[in-house]
Image (spheres, rainbow, N blue to C red):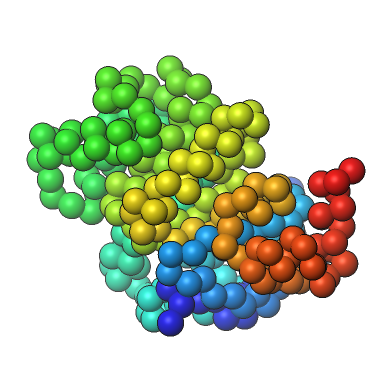
Length: 259
């Protein structure tokens, strides 16, 4: 059984004017998407900016409510869960955001940032929280001395490592990495991708890795789903998608790498 399944997910946004009126036009950001992600794999979700990748990723976590469709996590239909049950399920599902600065509260220290999920979900004393924070710092390759500092004191790559540490705090099984390296320099992005790969082995993680970069997705992913204009146009194992693509749009993405 797949760890996560989506069936016929659709998200439609009403187009509203400056006065909040809906003139009748609507945007279909995600259009009848079905997919399954097996435990321990990385499904790469690739496509051009604005095709609905991030919306889909957030719907899988129920950070965005779908217009229609169903999401199941470990056999449980999370699209019908109430707030309390959803909160418990959220322990198992986390997200790493694209912007490593905007996603971190500048008022908080690193220790407060990475232990915030634990403080919300578990009744732990400060010494235990600090111990967890130190372990998380080591896991993502940062020095424990960073715990007392604030986000603005770090580089983009270091801030993304802090975001990854926060995502790991509750020991989730599934993580959505939403354009997690697109804002970073190439060399730093490569370090973060390798970190994600090593953490997957160490923690037994399952990833949905969202990116507009086919080379990065090809390197990290077990399988690849190609998205265009809200639809999954092709999905398959990495070798098949990158060496024998069937859909014209997938072929265009691969040709763009060569040019």
